[in-house]
Image 1: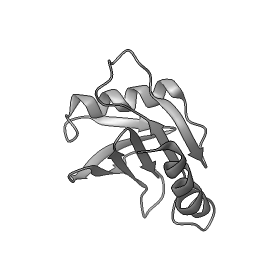
Image 2: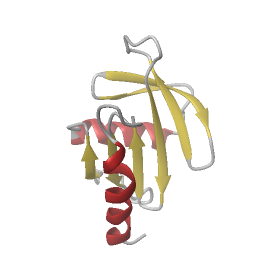
Image 3: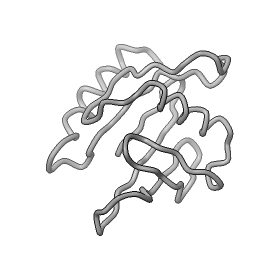
Length: 119
């Protein structure tokens, strides 16, 4: 997938839907190659509504690579998440550390060499 195309989609679809009163609280786009050696750290290509820690994102990618999605949990920011459903190229997770009655969740999707995270 070409970076210019991905950036255009991000600007049109994601960044305008993040924030107060919008469907997404935050979103991240990681430049990630699943076939690259594990010593290469994923790059945060785009982020909106969150200041992500690159080390934390590396731990998230390690979680995905271990492929024990329903046996372990992962952390993004202040929240710890537990996977609730798995699909072909994406999965959903629910926050275990939220104080909101309706809960909080995350959707994580892998497309080519990008990993999209919507909170």
